[in-house]
Image (cartoon, rainbow, N blue to C red; front, side, top):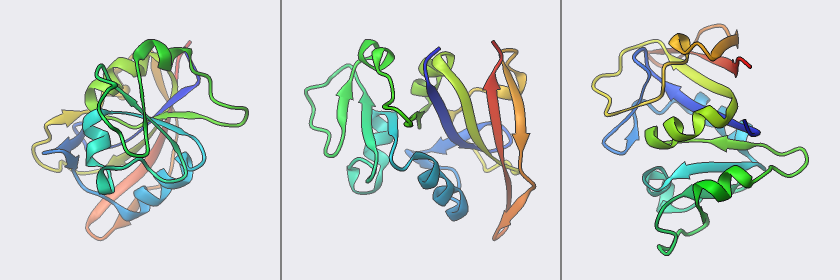
Length: 165
């Protein structure tokens, strides 16, 4: 296991997206995501990278795109292979955050030590990408959760999971 941490927002069915976008962008969650990841390294797949505002890396973070085709240009990001990523260590005081999408979560979750999950207490309709259900995974445990918050008509809370060693 490396020093990676997953970050995702999920609905009741652990859906994370539809048609290349988030199911329900929540400004409080987006601010929290920025606060968690700013100044650190974020790892994503090509489709997640292309869905970012302006199709560029996130400002204030080292952006790594896990890809098998590193020759394509990635404005504001670096292409990495899986072996390169797994050999990477965050700088002192830094973290490596896995930020999507589904195939990247599935590939890297076994290498993560923790997960910050925003749980939206609604079924947000038909998702076409999902995060693995940590509540039913025997090697993960819920460590803490916040009180439920509301943004407009959406209830959500923040959950923190750790891998059971």
